[in-house]
Image (cartoon, rainbow, N blue to C red):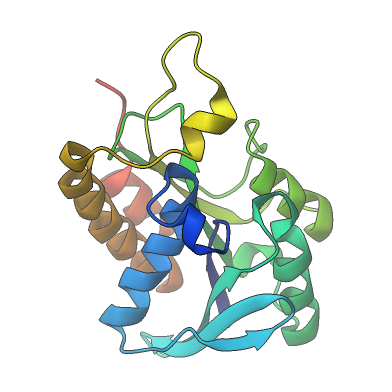
Length: 189
């Protein structure tokens, strides 16, 4: 069994913001698998599907970004899911808009949602698919930037990155994480 969780903040005021790219990913992925992510459990909206014979819980934590670990940890505890079967999709300001990077473990890299999950799971050995949202311009407030909306010109680029991230996620669930990293990891240009 796997958890695929997209990080974001609940509420209309956060829709289409950079920080909510994980929620957008879950919306796309759920639509692709014809799953409704509407059940509420452990402070998260979730739905269930199967990918290549593996049961997968699609989760959108409703705890706000900085407390995402509470939701993810409770799901892991209840379903006895080890950290290595958790895949987190999150925004990354160190990647150019639309680039993706897959990692099987590592630090939070300054991302408070990841920091919360590492703390709650007592492990950094979970997959993360980072979707680049670009960096804030020098002198701009980082919180304002990640809570800001995407420019219209960025939308097609991000839609493509979500499609690629979904393919990578499917490979990871199928036991082909190295293939996913080799095929979809991109470097800033």
